[in-house]
Image (cartoon, rainbow, N blue to C red; front, side):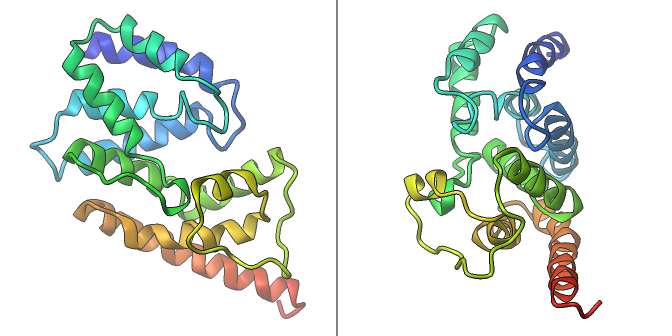
Length: 210
């Protein structure tokens, strides 16, 4: 197991190093640590599947890749069984938020990886990643005339370039209530509270109050 994970980490690292700071290999390392923490409370989960799914979960992210060629190539290089490959691909497919159009998390492995990934989207790191991605895409910091969308289609979520602060209301502030493991919910509490505090302070500074 360790050899496969080490090889996978080496293969994916060169891909993530081409991405912006919101989805680079440091993001993967943080999600990996989150997943290991959640795993301590879910001993029945398949640790190997969780570890490999975390490493691979953004390789074919549609924001950066047009096909799943790299994901398929790496999976084939790891000497996995067909059942393991299918399981990992299912976990990856069930991780994404997709504007609220996410697939159900059907296994404990999917639940762990989903929560681990979403934990890195909130809190101090989540704030930093939001503005890193917005900067990479040339988005405004905030736009007071812009209303947060509700009930978006996946196409609407992917194609409209909203201001970074709007993204908090369309996704990040929703994630605490969407955690699917007990440990994930526990870990999300403080991070969510920090985001709320940040947005309050940002508004004060914009309004010239503090």
